[in-house]
Image 1 (spheres, one colour):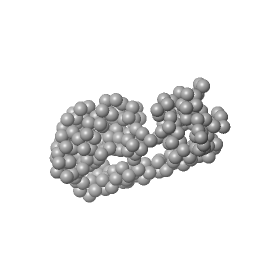
Image 2 (cartoon, rainbow, N blue to C red; image 1 turned 60 degrees about the vertical axis):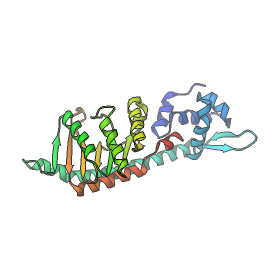
Image 3 (tube, rainbow, N blue to C red; image 1 turned 135 degrees about the vertical axis):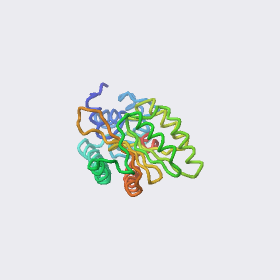
Image 4 (tube, one colour; image 1 turned 120 degrees about the horizontal axis):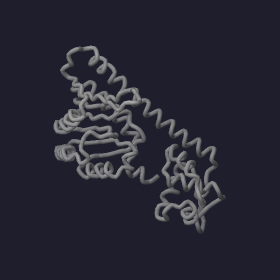
Length: 272
């Protein structure tokens, strides 16, 4: 049975996986299916279909009908899509709050940097990619207790980032902690995903979210490195700020934790 890929893409945009979208669109075409039937009709691997159906049931997009052979039915499109939209609104509201907190924290620092002819002692403005990469490596090396990161492309560090791996190991040996939030698109990039796994093996805790407001690293609640993308859509120019300011770092740490609490683990994503 052919499925309309544009409709599949629309459902994926509402926050479900491609397999979940294909199975739901198959379920709506008939009163009920067994797991084997829907796997075949939706062209979803048999070994994955049970997890996909379980995810749809948990999302209230499908209903399980127990019996000698269990069957599954789709929840009517109107309430099903309304629920997906409600979940997306909640996610956007969380991101909006986090973004507003970051903007409020960074605005006075940015303004101070623009109105002073001499840079403040605790603010370093970086525009050269090499200088940004060096400062990124430096903040990892200086961390003694905690590293918190918002990770989104493009990345300034080398793909392997061996210095970062060693920093995470050093932190864990000392009883510290390293946490990172990645965007969902990292899961589709084999090189980035391999790096996520390497950092995880070293002791970094990772979570995933659909969007991040900016790239950010906070070390020991006292040092901050963040990017400030050029607001002009047609340019990719970026200015990075390195700031040693405990009050600002503490504020950005709280913003990080807000996003962290709402982000998903690999296990969460795998259960979709």
